[in-house]
Image 1 (spheres, rainbow, N blue to C red):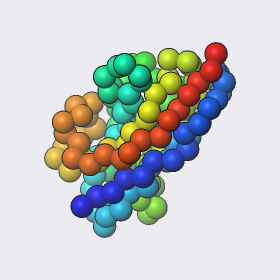
Image 2: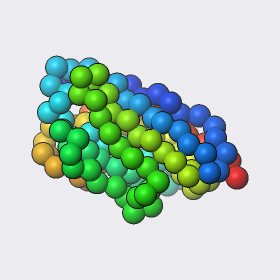
Image 3: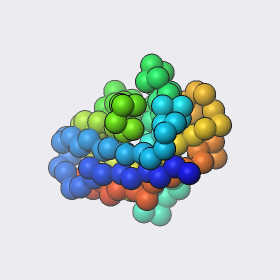
Image 4: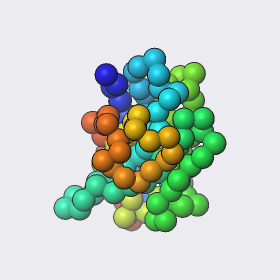
Length: 125
């Protein structure tokens, strides 16, 4: 069983930055593909970014490319999402997720078996 706990969300003005963290339990964290998704009110959950187990390969949604950076520290069992140049449309609950079924970063939410409870990010205009 894997437990994921997100932190770092909050209220920020447009153009500002936040760094989300996701702490994972489990001895095999370094084997997981880790992803970030988000869900805005009234919208479906959407993919944000994902990272391969060794941190070398990453994958981003077009809407965040160049502004967000995903990274991981396997020694700390933690994955991060650095969010810069935030926009009001980035407002959402952000979830981290772990996948054992794929070796490559993926945007497919059904490839992720474990999910955190989410952290709210609100960007004011």
